Length: 161
Image 1 (cartoon, helix red, strand yellow):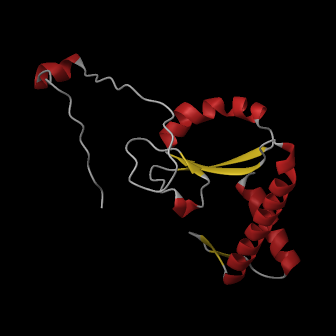
Image 2: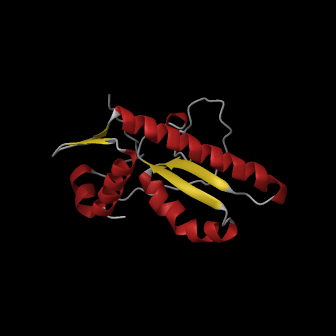
């Protein structure tokens, strides 16, 4: 939906509820206390509805419901998005929701699953290796001429606090 369509829908909803849901300034939009409460209650209603659908559909043996997955953006672009059509055909009753970011923590975003790259810190999560990636070190001839050919590539890990 376009921004203007969303704005119009929110304004209609505010008019229907006779309550302001969002504080709007020229630089920012933030929820009012009423907006936060309305959002939380709607979120709970949707979760209850999804749970009802899951409990009724369990007898069919067909996976269904919402699946919320977190992953780094580059991984999503390279590995997940190209396979979405195939997944949707195989599991038409699953509604996927992705949380894309470079720092996915797992439990903090209310995720059902998380796809991570690299070593996973110790956790009680069930972990399954999906694939391995082979890295290739490349350098421009001018770089190698100026700096020399490294005997062994080193990985630089910079922590940002």
